[in-house]
Image (cartoon, rainbow, N blue to C red; front, side):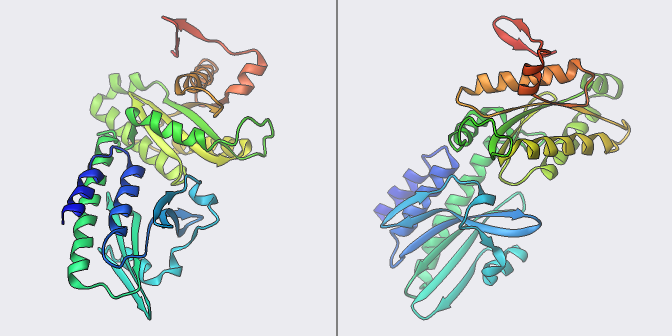
Length: 334
């Protein structure tokens, strides 16, 4: 049991979801007759439940893929694994399949009532009760620690990712960026800064409880308008940031305009109409501060141009209309 306890100690020393995932797969791979382990990402694409391997064992080592889930060639419909699909539909804790010489156990990871990941363990022999109990124990430690990490990364009011997690997610997404390319049809990574218009007036007229409700409802609309592989952050106050993965410039414009119209057309209780201004920029090489600064400049221009609009940094820069307030060597928005 000593090696197992050491593995558990190492596993809970990580402060990153992906490293924690790799660590738990390494631990499971060392148990008994296990020959293959995988962490499957669960997501939706065009209304269909999908899965794809995010980390897996290969030649005794654990490797991971940072590819966009929707564009991963290894993705497949969840329906191809009927036992797992049935388990998730029922909110179950585990699923299994046994065929001659191959026995598979699935353990879905549930967060906020949704299965986001699933651990898959495969071996040539049937799982004995003792082995199953050990696997389940390791899994519960992993799931509980995942939930703790997730809680520390979330904004308490909206449940979106918080600002302190932004740099890590930014670095991960920027590393997947194909590089500078002026072709509008080339899929790229994007950053959008979103700010609720006249939010101070909402708080002043209706009170902070209604202001908080607006923030929660806007956060919900953000969730519904973007894909599962996109990352949405609340930066504090009424400002949000979205990292969009692997789409073209026209698709980015369309997605952000769709969000703007969805918020504009939503009826907020007691308040009525609320609008947002949006500035966005392509991810180039550079620090988070530099990229955020460009998105904020585009956002500032949207505010100065009448609010309730979407502005692309490159368009504003090329038009010569970019206006930036500088205070204490930093960009000041409004």
